[in-house]
Every structure is written in structure tokens, then in C-alpha cells.
Image 1 (tube, rainbow, N blue to C red):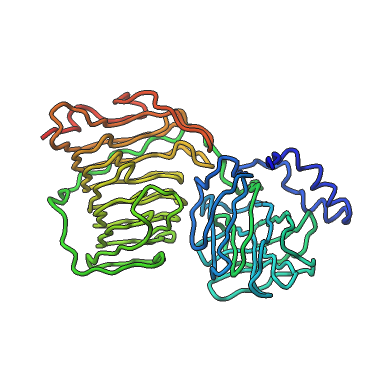
Image 2: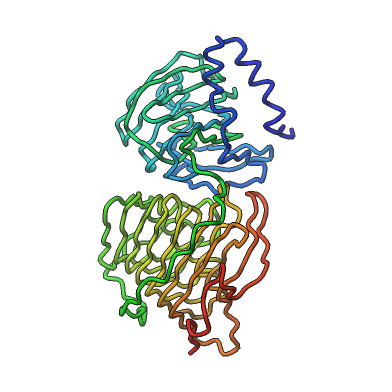
Length: 454
């Protein structure tokens, strides 16, 4: 059956809420007229813009995102930015099966990592519970007995304002309390030893949310002072190898001692693959060789630093920069990327320096059709390029910039490598269009002396 659009469902949601008190209905709609900064009804048939951790996720023919592995200890899909503070997130949720009374299907807000979040859970016991989750520690902020059953759609909503967290089910507030676990973070869809469906996800700002498209007035970053560190001359030999069966979470600094890590995903371009490493805000990954298969490489959930990290065979992407404003890649290299090496989904600036790239589609791409659009910048300095179609792709209609210096292109006598490709960014579900390339002094910033051919 064809899925109806969200606009056609609003009268039904209001009718459900009409049976509760006026106070509860008003509380549930406090952000109805705030700016919508994110929405996804999955009618495009994919989960582009979401990051999976655990579980088996598919979008069915009616445009519903389903998690079907009821044996998964904790399955999650995350979206949005770690910098989001005060906002409301709402989704329709349909439990399909519960493995026990404590199993759950639910919605998350202010997720700072894959295991730290506020969660509104529909439990196998029939209750709905608003929780502060920090790893294995789960604190109940409040709950209500609702007779939750399988096969029924429930509209869940979490509102965050400072330290006040509220949870609503079908427009009725079931819990409210003060909690200081997390002041900002992403949204999430979650199950634990349960299966279920998710649809019509929306995020409204309430003063602290991130606007969808900042005006293109941010000045582009300047070229950093030159460093004397040369790009690496060759590829390192691993000190040892380690197969990875699940994403490695990194907070602080992880030094791999040039060990090779491999084993997640299928080595292809599927967007449903887990990352090898997930870096929390402020984390540093150094001296790591990522072998094949490499899943979705590295996810930076906030500001991050990658030092001397090597990708022997890029799968989907080498690294995705998501929730911060400043990301640094210093040293290392990547090869065999059929599409792009670095994907920039969040806001801010990516710095790539002292790096080498071989046999790739693009070294850098500013996302042109993510759920949330930003003005993005990249600064590329002291990089060796071989057998690569383009160095950077940016969206000029959003004010993106790319600045290049000390770029050495090897083995390209016909000058076929594009330095800076310009696109017109579009909403999620559409494909950006290429509109030009080359230096222009506004978005693509370089001069002939910045590019050397060997």
C-alpha cells in the first residue's frame, strides 16, 4: 500500500491527542512552529545521511525503515550533528517483536556516542520509559504504563531544553525531568533485542538547533603556514594485522603502532556498512593502517585529528566528518577509492596536509545532498596526487570553499586531473549537478604556482 505523506497524517495525530488534557497537548506541540532542521520519511528508499551501528536495517517498499534482527543487543541509526543542543525530535515507531520484557524499540536525542544518549523506549513490558543511557548504566527519568503492543504505530517525541528532558507518546507527556548527562548530540533510532519500524523523523530547533543552511558569509579559511614535513614517499609495512568484527570506539587518543586493522563490510560502496573506527568529539587516531575490507572507514562524530593514518583499499569512504567544526588529516595516505576518500557531512573546515592519494575518484567531497546542508570549507596543502579524477568537489550555491597549496600531481601529462569541481547542492533525495570547475578567486582558491606536475 502506498505510504501517505506526513502532511496527510497530522489530523490523525491531533485527533489522538484530543483525548488528553489541554496542558498535555500544548506541551507536546511547543515546538510545532520552530524551524525544522531535519526530516526524513524514507520515501527515497535509502538511509543516506544516517550512520548505522548494529542490527539489520532496510527500507521497505512503503518507505518504512525496519530493523529486523531481534537478536541484536543494541541496533542504532544516527543522524544530525553532535553540536545540536536544544531541540525536539519526533518519529513514528512500530514495534514488531520483543525478545523480553526489557527489550525495546525507541527514539534517541542528544547522543554523544553510540552508547550515550537520552532514549524514549517502548518496552516489551508494555511501558514507555524516558531514559538517560550511559553505556550499561540506564537511569529512568520517568515512565508510564501504556499497554504497548506489537504491530501498532506510536508517535514518540523527545524535547530537550537545557537540562530539562521531556518524553511524549502520541502527544501525551509521559515523563519530564532534569538531567545533565548530555548537553548536545545527535538523534537516533534504536532497538535492543527487538525488531521494529521507523518513519517520519523530524527535528525542530528551539533556540539552540543548527540552521539547515547558514548564509554564505563565513570567510574562507586562510592557507596555514607552510610546514617542512614532506608527504610520505611510500606506503608503510604493517607491524602486524588484526581482524575487526565490530566498530572500535575511540575517545582521547588511539595509537595503533602501524598495525593493520581490517574485517568490516564487503569492500564495496554500500552505504549500510559500519565504520572501522568511530571517533568521539576531540579524539585522535594515529599510526593506523586500515586494510580491506574497511567498511565505512572512520567516522568523526565531532572535531577530530587523524595523524599518519593509511587506507590500503578504501571501501565506501576513508573517513566521514560529521558533527564538529574543525577536522585535521596530517600525514598518511589512501588508495583505491572508486568514489571519494574524505566525505564532509558536518559543518566547518577540513584540513588535509602532508598526504598522498592514489587511484581515487575524489580526495574530498563536501556533501551535496545530505539531510542538513551547511557551508563547508577544505584546506588542502602539501599533497601528492596520482591517478585521481578530482582533488575536491564543493557546492558553490552554499558558499563552500576549497583552498589549495603545494599540490603535486604525478603522471598526468595531459592535465586531466580536476583540481576543484563545482556542484549545485540539492535537498536529500536528489542528485547534485556539476556546474563547472577551476580557480575563480571566490570558491576555488589557487593559482598556477600552487599546482606542480611531475
